[in-house]
Amino acid sequence: MPKRRAPRDPVDDVLHALADPSRRRIVERLIRSPASVSELAAPLPMSLPAVHQHLRVLEASGLIASEKVGRVRTCRVEPAALAPVERWVIAQRSTWEQRLDRLGEYLGE
Amino acid sequence: MPKRRAPRDPVDDVLHALADPSRRRIVERLIRSPASVSELAAPLPMSLPAVHQHLRVLEASGLIASEKVGRVRTCRVEPAALAPVERWVIAQRSTWEQRLDRLGEYLGE
Image (cartoon, rainbow over all chains, first blue to last red; front, side, top):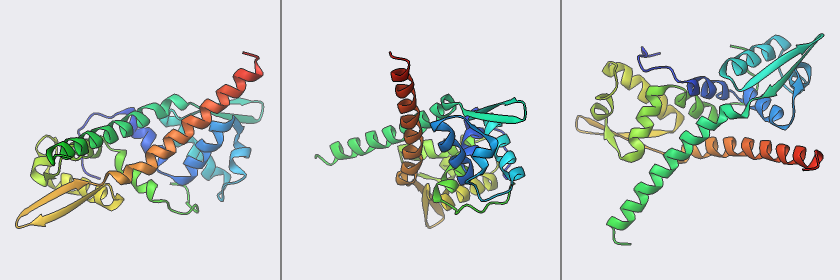
């Protein structure tokens, strides 16, 4: 990795967490309703420790939170963590569309 | 990293590429217009080899493309690579909003 001097932004952790298909599957499941770790693990083709590691990455990013009652840990999504990603992507598209509009005007269309 | 068995998705590389603030700065710059590597490097507090490494990550993800003419390499953005990220984030928000609506109906509001 190149040496990083830019200030760390929370959105870095959210994007890193989402850059894995299993973690996106977990978020997609939790968006529908909270779920226990074993419910989250059931459809995933990996060991339970691997699922726990993905959950730690998601929790560190702020995308999910969890609570343990007795022996059951229940996870829920924190959808507000997705908002900065959505804003950034939409801002890029908006800037791109403005550029195309200016090009269109320049070409006299 | 947990052992990954889920199929690799191109959006993984796009999200990984965007999970670094310097790479997002490069994309934000290129969304406005194409730029040479030295123009991209000028505002970034890092060495030219570090900039090249970031550009390689961005190019491998499909977010940017580059062309060398003489001694000048010019980069341009490929905004279509952002579309799957935008779709995924908006789909999550939509599912979340439907869940809130159902909850509101259930509570008789």
